[in-house]
Length: 281
Image 1 (cartoon, helix red, strand yellow):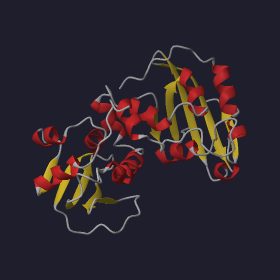
Image 2 (image 1 turned 90 degrees about the vertical axis):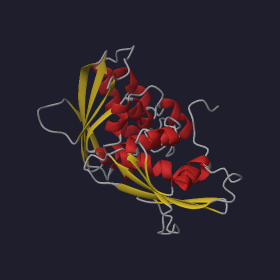
Image 3 (image 1 turned 60 degrees about the vertical axis):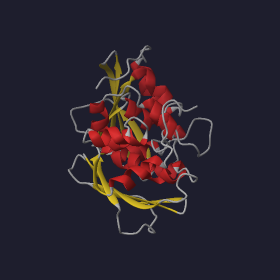
C-alpha cells in the first residue's frame, strides 16, 4: 500500500509545536478519560522524517521524543498532512480508507483521540478528527483507485466496526420507497475477513416501503429472526458493494457474494437501494 506523496516538508520543530498545542483545543472531560501513548510518524516521499510521541495521562498531554519503549498506537501520515488533520480540514476516516493515514496498534485509542480535539476557533462541535463522519458519496469517491489489498487490510482492523455501523445505519436512507413499496423481504449479511477471524452478522428488513437494519452497534430490534436469504462476503467486498464499486450480479458470479436461500430476494434488496456512487453530484 502506497501513501500519498507529500509535496511540502513540514519542519520537525513545526510538527512538535503543532502537537504540543493540541491541549489548547481539547475537550477537558473527554481528554481526562484517555490514557495511553500515540506515536506520530511523519513521512516525506515515503520515508519517515520525524516522529513524536503524545502521552495522555489524567487530562495531561505531553509531547516527547520517541524512544525504544513501546507505544499503544502508531499513526503514520505525510508530514504536510498533519496540519489539515488536526485542524479539521481533513477527515481521518477518509484518510485511512484512501491510504493517506496508517493506524497500527490500539485502534480504539486512535478513534477516541479523534473525538477529543475541536476545530480551532470553535467550541465543541465539530471535533477536529471525526472518523465516523463518513458521507457515503465522499467515501465512494475516495475509494476510486484504492487497491483491494489496502481495503482488505483496513477492513481487517479496528476501524472495521466504524465503517460497518455507518453503512448499515445509513442503509434505510438509501431506500427507493417507490420501488420498494411491494417488497417484503429479510436479508442477512454474514461478513468475514476480520483480523481475529470472527464474523459479524447484520440483518436488513424491507416491508411496506420501510427499511430497518439490525446488528452490532445498531439499536433496531424490530427485525424478525426469519431470513429469506443470507449474503456472505468479506468486509472489504461489502464496502465496495455499498459504495457502488462492486456490481451485485458480478459479485455473485465471481463468488465474492455468496447467497444462501432465495437469490431473487437478495438481488431484489440490492435493486431497491440507491447505492451511492463516485459520479453522484
